[in-house]
Length: 333
Image 1 (tube, one colour):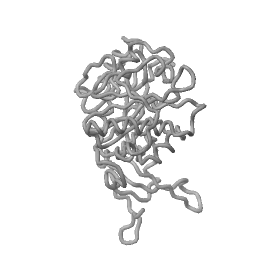
Image 2 (image 1 turned 45 degrees about the vertical axis):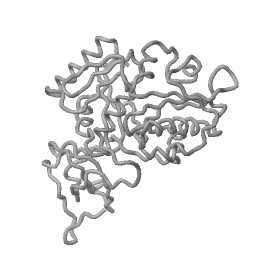
Image 3 (image 1 turned 30 degrees about the vertical axis):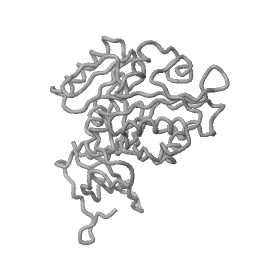
Image 4 (image 1 turned 180 degrees about the horizontal axis):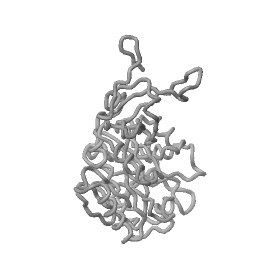
């Protein structure tokens, strides 16, 4: 990481660079000997009253005294993409939203308020893709009231780590006491290599049955709101691998939307893991998506799901950006 100009370390950023991606070097413990330095890369989200705040691509906020800076510079908005289809954040955010639709929604400027009786945060959170048309505090108050009317905790879904993502909004929410509860990765990859893998024994359907819902582990009672979220989307497919008992050995869901195929709800019976069933489910769904003209794939996976991360890494999926759910401080525990 090169900070020097003529052999000297220089701080070449100012408060006017808020909103830009920067790289800084600071003293870890000012005044201590020997001197130790820490490097931080992320979006400069605040520089007020002698405190510099940088939001990393992971959503982590780093605060540092201005006096601890020894070097700093503006860097390109995103690093060069090493693999995967080209995609902007706005395109992917809208594609992923269409694949997981709420029961009800309401616009708030360019934000969308979404609710589905509490089934998953994605379907019960604000999607802030643009300007809410009013000051931020007013928009958050409007959102809180909307969710409270429905007996739901207010959440805002934000993204970090790519050009055009929402580091500034993340920092503003944190300043107002909103708590980041969950972080997940949005990964993308080429679709054809997935469809080339073996897919024996996988059945595809346009709808879910009770057995499929029994294997799906995110809802104990699959009411109409669950079926609505799972069934809505441009072109929805469900995969099932029959099991020895009443429940399937593996399931999955795919939504085809133009060039994109999104994979969700890939679940494997713990007793049937390490047999390639998750891969077979995705291969069968990918094959159908290729037939419908898709060429690129995406999925979402929580950042602490090590098993799934290893599987998807091996299938060629690379991180595009991360998304987070922030919960209102006024919401009950």
